[in-house]
Length: 255
Length: 255
Ligand SMILES: NC(=O)c1ccc[n+]([C@@H]2O[C@H](COP(=O)([O-])OP(=O)(O)OC[C@H]3O[C@@H](n4cnc5c(N)ncnc54)[C@H](OP(=O)(O)O)[C@@H]3O)[C@@H](O)[C@H]2O)c1
Ligand SMILES: NC(=O)c1ccc[n+]([C@@H]2O[C@H](COP(=O)([O-])OP(=O)(O)OC[C@H]3O[C@@H](n4cnc5c(N)ncnc54)[C@H](OP(=O)(O)O)[C@@H]3O)[C@@H](O)[C@H]2O)c1
Picture (cartoon, rainbow over the protein chains, first blue to last red):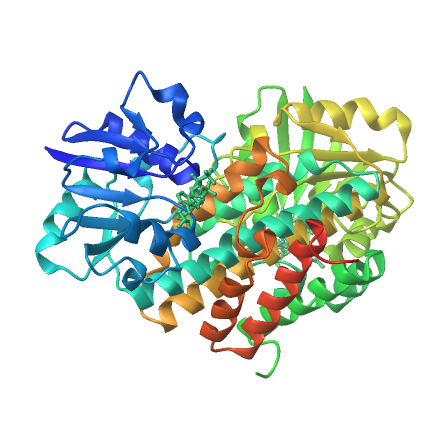
């Protein structure tokens, strides 16, 4: 049995709470939030607190709070020499106050409160600078996910950066697809199966092999037609830059 | 019963053949390819031919050939006044020789021979300039898909353009994620659940609402760190332009 305290009440804290709660070998001692109201709907399932001095002894303390709050909150914790983890992709493990045993528990997924997430398939990237704590972190991760990877700080930062490309930037391309269709009398909904299939394709095939379309074929006629059809200069710039990028990748253009 | 002749042996022709074959109220009279070898593995399931003069009478002729071949092949067909459709997102319906009844049967999905596609969920965008042919095209589409939409040429071209953003450009962002991770010692595979979830999220939520991350939060510290971490100037340009785009969309920047 691993005893845990969760700190924070945001997207990650809420999803972690649900996953820990379901896991057989995890006991949640407390759920701390500086605003107790934010977690009051869970007060029948766990002891909710908003006072750090009430936190009792646990094997692991998980700081699922904003990146900027990690350092400060870890210093305020009224104990030392315990295992304290943060859940951030970009914050250094050294941001945690050095009075603790320090580690990272980074779930590589996009969380929002509305969307249900199947934690079993969420890769959890773990790291610690206290070697002896490694088995505890690993057990904690394996209790909720099938994909647990030891990832050092440099690798984690690179993953977080790549995640911005495949998640935030991709989502912005969906947004532009939305803008283009709605502004010109077409239906964005018709693109949804394509969006899903594009993501499914690279689960088994490399993105290199999965590529198709006018840029890869160097189909200048279609590219010209598309640029003409785009009304927004900003959309044109993105079309040009990404067409160029595909052509570099597929040897249509000298680097 | 609708009788059909398929022309072409590429990705779309092959997927259409399989879908038509499975449909109850469709009979495939012939499958034509200029290279009979390309479809010889199906010769027990359908009469394969490579000679246009052998094509017999059918309700519908589907030209699933390269965009550039549609006009020429439609002229070569040794009959007139029959319903001839092409399957392209960007080619005008008027590219089909005017001796025919002309229409479009555009399946809005990405097809490659390896990947299995569930045709039931593929939106089929239909159009005709011969009003009386509309019920036949509609029945043909409904025989293989649950999502059939009347879409005019302008709308179809806009959808095709938007598809380049959400499919080809998105896939290139996956490719860049692959390049960044592999070149810096991290594992691309760890990003796959995130890629899938990003696509799933916008099935119910608008891309606007689904957005998260440093650009939307205007988190300058992380953006700076990311730009420093990127080794390739071309990746930096894409990072900057898409960050900028997200900030326009979410009111962080004046238009
Ligand atoms: N969202 C994701 O998709 C995702 C994925 C992987 C990792 N992460 C990482 O997980 C961590 C949490 O992210 P999130 O998305 O859950 O953030 P979030 O939804 O914005 O929630 C942030 C939480 O931190 C609390 N907080 C902020 N400043 C605090 C302070 N000074 N003292 C105590 N609590 C404070 C907030 O409390 P109030 O409500 O009282 O302000 C809130 O409960 C971050 O490190 C993030 O980088 C996020
Ligand atoms: N792939 C997709 O994801 C997709 C999605 C929606 C719509 N479409 C549209 O569907 C159509 C076919 O695309 P595809 O992906 O199936 O293309 P493809 O895989 O490249 O196949 C093209 C087919 O056209 C044939 N062809 C080319 N020139 C010809 C000619 N002059 N006479 C006779 N046949 C000729 C080719 O025969 P050879 O093998 O002998 O060259 C081949 O069978 C295009 O209009 C495309 O825009 C494609």
